[in-house]
Image (cartoon, rainbow, N blue to C red; front, side, top):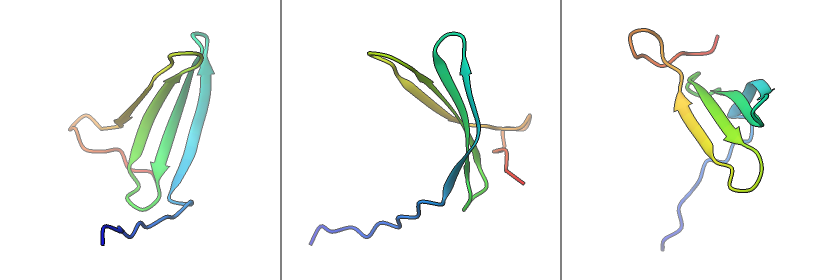
Amino acid sequence: MFKKEVDVNADRFDTKINEIIDTSQNVDVLVDHKTKVQYLIVSQRGIGGGVGVTVLVDKDGKPLLAE
């Protein structure tokens, strides 16, 4: 009754850039292959670390699309 069909596609997202900066933060750029939209992900390592995700946009506020 409450089952929801989910489109599980492991190849939809791909990490294009993976950097670890001096502050123990991991910075990734993730690309959605379906929409071509790029996302910036910053995560803090260790106990109590958090994660932030945002869409990368151009100067007009439109999402940056991968080539």
